[in-house]
Image 1: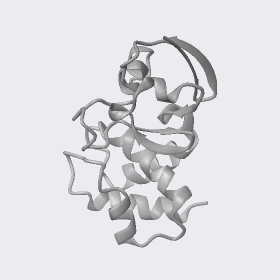
Image 2: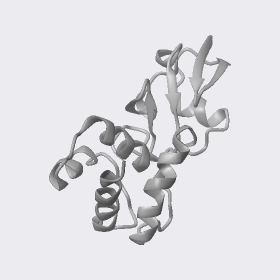
Image 3: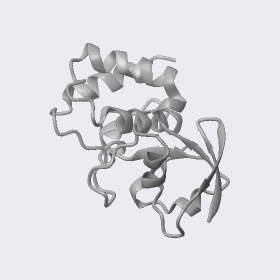
Length: 149
């Protein structure tokens, strides 16, 4: 089955199996920043944007994305670097496995929530798991990033 995606601003025609899952297709075509962890939609490691909305790509049929805009961390490089600087300053970069999905979730949150409280931030990001930290450093970094225009 042939689908057409706009991935990070590049139109790609891709052949997929009818039941293919989007994360598998993206990784097969070299988008390795999209991490595969739980494979059941509970950890958030596979967060990307489809039409600027955050989705869990491990639970999203690849055919459903046909004709849509898909954004991975590579497509938001400038914003990712801004947030990344705060993450590094807070010393929470550690292994880095969760960073692409966390960045994608935070960028979506920044667009959706105006002046969120710390509790609103925590609630929004509850689905993004980091196995290396206690999240306090991440939350400090995110609060600093949210203040930047």
